[in-house]
Length: 481
Image 1 (tube, one colour):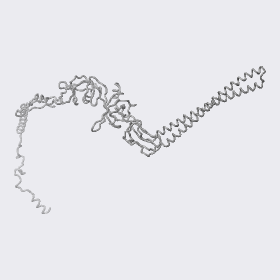
Image 2 (cartoon, rainbow, N blue to C red):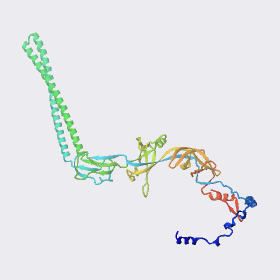
Image 3 (cartoon, helix red, strand yellow):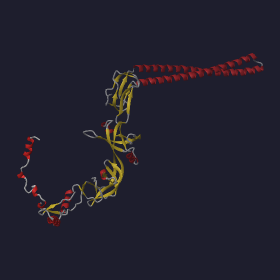
Image 4 (cartoon, rainbow, N blue to C red):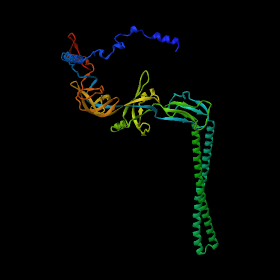
């Protein structure tokens, strides 16, 4: 170790005068050690002190419990629910059924051109929305070819009638020939009988007798020939009459074809669409216009199967209804009568389709395609109640107020009337039916009618207990509501 290091160690060695004298090694001999600070009496004194502290604390706590201020008991008030009510009025009621439907035309017609040709006239009101009167001329087609066809038919008819006259004259002549041949035959028969008598007496030779027999044969042949010719002439007359009939039919067809060059309105109608202009050329059967019959509108609407069943018992056909078209600023309404029932159940919604004819006086204000509401009366119920649907609970009960508390009433639902239910229930007239739906509804629940809350609140405040607070000031404790 170097001298520098030794000097450093000597520098940090504490001086002798800083060490306590009583701690010097020479003073720590066994016979001179210090006495213990805590003895057995010291431990006992400390234990007694702890017990005294704990006892004092327990005594103080018990004294505080015994002398605590008396707690004012809070009076509990029953909760009251504010409800809206209606007055029970048993009455005879007719169910009102609301449905929705569409106004449709009872008769739609697509007018087609019966005759082909060039259009030479079009009615000025043959446009969408135009009104057409029955018998009005709509379209004219050039009639030149049809007039020629009618003239040819007239000529053929005249020829047939002339041929019939000729044939009838030939028949008349043949009938006269038959009469002449019959007379000649009769004379020949008489002459033959005389010749036979004379031949028997020898006055006539056999040659003369044979000549008379030959004459009779010739006269008979002439008669037969005339009869045959008459039959042929009669058939000729029939053929000429058939020719006349054919000519007449041809003339009728020509007249009809000529008449079809002019298209007229079959009834009062409203034009939906038009496809014709002057100068256009139409083929036979081509569509000219589409119209619907004016003053013949219907409303088509659907009822549920339950509604249909309810009406079925009292009859459906002929039942009156009201149709409302909600347009602004003024609603348009019209009356109608159910005229027929749809052919089958509507597969889309399972309803029954009905059709009603609208009264003619209001049809000019309603247009086909309008979406309308339909109101009609349903079944009649006697001594029943009409209550809001919210009044009836899932268990089939509604509540009335009996001495300020709820009382349940069992009801039988007979029908629906919009948002109301028609029910049969044992309720006295004038009873207050609760219309407000309450989650805690039940028999005996305290309720207050809307508008009577202030008077009930005053009664509750007068019955509340008064609580003393600090300096004795009374504090009203309001009841729960």
